[in-house]
Image (cartoon, rainbow, N blue to C red):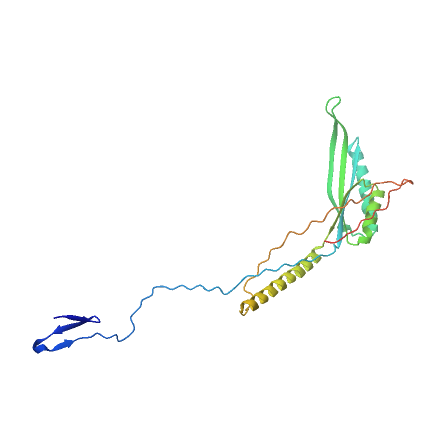
Length: 237
């Protein structure tokens, strides 16, 4: 007769004696694991926004002169005389020569097609860009230039100098970081976790608003025949 107990072999011997062999568990069952991967999220992301409004610290004025003449030399003489006078008088207001820049100079013929195509004259266009850092002189620059013969005033753009732009960018950046830190601390407190150090920072700079050109010169003439004084204001950016 045979019998199996816990996987052990039982054999029957002579004289009725029964010997039972039992296999015992002497140690832990061997377990082989080839690879284990554990991912634990130990960070979380927060965002902050910083916004700074500031007054511009410089103005750019576009001035120009346009004339037509029958010869190239005459057109150039007229243009040079007017532009040189404007430049000299603007500098006399305390504007640095480095802040007066010629941005365009064009001379081209005009044609008469009534009796065949032939040149009837020459057109000259000269444009200046004047950078003014003292806003009290903005109106003076415009009035002096038009008095000297400028017949094109494109407008005024109130801008921010490079140095001031860097300063306000840092102010906005600090605001954004402080706001993000406050969010992180509040979130950690509510979740019952402890904050560590900042491990990553990314910056997304919004497009800066473009200055809006203002009509620089009111060409209306009063009863005395003189142009009304110019009045422009920088506002804020």
